[in-house]
Length: 182
Ligand SMILES: Cc1cc2nc3c(=O)[nH]c(=O)nc-3n(C[C@H](O)[C@H](O)[C@H](O)COP(=O)(O)O)c2cc1C
Image (cartoon, rainbow, N blue to C red; front, side, top):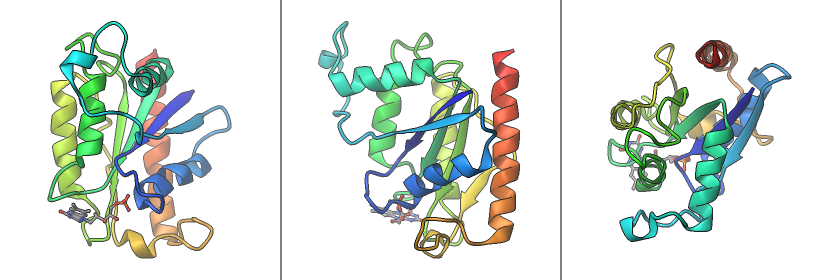
């Protein structure tokens, strides 16, 4: 199974990107996780959204199309989703209702330094994905709180309870993606 992972943060030291790198530890050997970097995706411009799109956009669309499932980890910016992530979803959402993201089984996670781990951004993200007809894995949901204390110097999640919960999330999510494939 191929999972495309997208982080809503461009920051080198991003906790959300680190979370997506970590999930490979929690899936079966026959599941691959590729993390897509949104850094080169330009701002959405309808004039550029023709048959020939900017190369980073084309790469994003092809990566989504060829994946069995998407896994998004988002920071919370001012109670919502960073523009970087919303922009990528906007590109991926066209043509409306026939896009590469339409029907693509998607997991949503968040991570923040706060004690609620970006939960408000997750709510907004789920709403955005509703508009694009993207089915979202419902439960359990995973929000990594106090992200600045969550990883050791090797990028490993340290807390056993958090690790167990992430394992539960990834097992449920990958089974759900497999079921969607039929
Ligand atoms: C513009 C901006 C707005 C932010 N707003 C929130 C917020 O509303 N809630 C929150 O928990 N953290 C907020 N933060 C803190 C981020 O959650 C924190 O920097 C987080 O580490 C970013 O994710 P990253 O580590 O993946 O880059 C904000 C950060 C920025 C830069």
